[in-house]
Length: 422
Image (cartoon, rainbow, N blue to C red; front, side, top):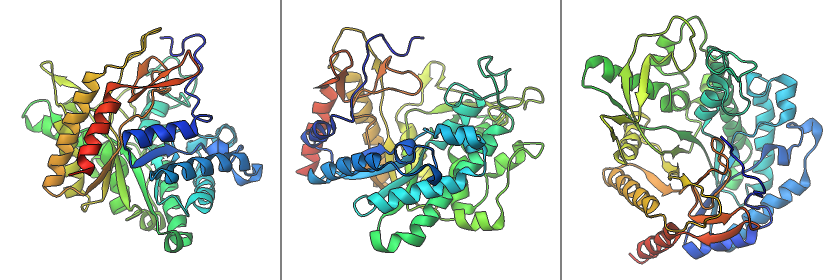
């Protein structure tokens, strides 16, 4: 699949800061979630290589522009762009050294932006990093077992995903700790994490499929949520990951992790049915350890928007009623070369139905404080490049990145105007 067409020049976010913030204001959004690029702040990934002041200046400009329009910045510290210098030095998130380097990087972010940024997410979708980067090898750094993906030149899908997941969790805990110790009192901000997950229903009403659905949650959403609440991995992971492949937290690490969040971000797109399958004894990977197969449909029917409601309520009841934000939700359409497509009624329907399900969850007590559409602009998607479009705003990649409001942007404008006045 060709992910980037010839002559495509991207969205030029760097030079369009003022105009893009004006678009947000025009639509009526009150908050904007963006990520900071680690290497833009620390070119080598650590303090030894120095701090890039130009990078700090750019984010200050963006933050100040947002605030001037009454838009709150919600900032993600890590969205998958591990600095190449750290990958070369010790294998990136395969190396325990990254925990301290991430702490230093987060400290710089808090110090330079925390007087104005009051909502931080340490990591975006650590599960995606683990699954796609180290079990399937289809995203950076492209490591996996050869039997899973012949394109992988190195990796071990049975062990590396768990090591990486462990270090991601500890990096989150370290960043939360430094904020609490150095900045919480003066800046009065909040630190959370953005976790992806879908709801899982049993494929049949059999006892084994019900257990498979529970395991599917344990190996996805609970994988990263449970350590932040209890300081331990989910029991299903402990039971299913054989041969000492699942790392353990020391007593000190467990203490650091417990309660290491002020809110939880949920990135939700769709849900799955889970069916029990025999556990693998050969060609074992993170993905086979859950001893279940998952599918998006059952007899041709998907779970639909109600999955977002059920996942939010599950998080409420299992994990001590956390403050939650829906930090990503949206749908894409195929990018058609040479055509500016602005009529996206399917996207409007998707948002309307999912927002209704979030409203239902709130009506029975879920502590959801906000909702972020993915995404404001068409953009480069990690898995699909420029072949799909998620934006509320169309970006013409072949004409300098010109912006055009889609029908969904106008829908949101009316929706938010009605909400504001009621």
